[in-house]
Image (tube, rainbow, N blue to C red; front, side, top):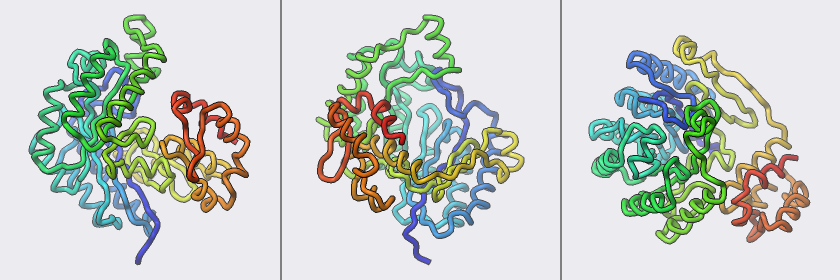
Length: 378
């Protein structure tokens, strides 16, 4: 049976060696037996959910966490073999795995490559060891270089490097050195985020106690536009608020999120969008290991209005913006009929621009993107 329906798969592997000081993700350390039991449960869920993917072709797969590279590499390979056996996987499917430089070696990377993983996302954050230590990373810059070079040696030709600005002790000069060093490596993709101090993290407590001083917003924005300038000069396309890619190397999986392609999340806490239905698995790891198929919660059917809202505040993350043609084809209404006044107001304020059938953020709009996107809640 042929199908034109596309699907993305997300595997949540919630383990790490040690949580970073800023991390509020659903992840944490676990012993080897627990990690093995969880992966076995994840494989069971993968097989038993296959019927929900009938009529779909899987265009991208993403193994995220946590730190998926903490898990047994043989189990990762087995998981992907089951995926191929029970799902219709596109021949050119993008299969991404997040790795921490402190948790991979040549042997693991070789197994990943043979398993069909064709894109790595390596969490570097900074090339300054003092800055890495300040946020609780388990690796050094040298260990990152070893992992990056090993990945190239094994054969990975599509690598993303994660960077982070506004770190404790960081300066514009040290951040510039990080950009220069990463650009010298010539990765296919760079994700550059600003540090967010989340509640219920050690970093939040450190800021509250005054032992760490957060960056001022103006200085943080200077780093953002420094990143834009340096990376665009080096030939990268700034295609999403925090993401840059060599032409044609945009992250297909994340593009799917921003354009509302259906996706199926597997593992604890993993969210899904199937049709116009959103749901997710609960976060109880022990219960999931016992019975992975009875963990769904927060089932929500999206109204047309909610779908329109999502189309706008997700689509505006893309530098190209939202297509007027695609909006009308999806909803049967012109974008100008639904959001004309909101768009005009934002254009008058210098926050949005309209060109060649797309509505997109201006530079001023990017600086306050959350505010602009909130205006599209009907």
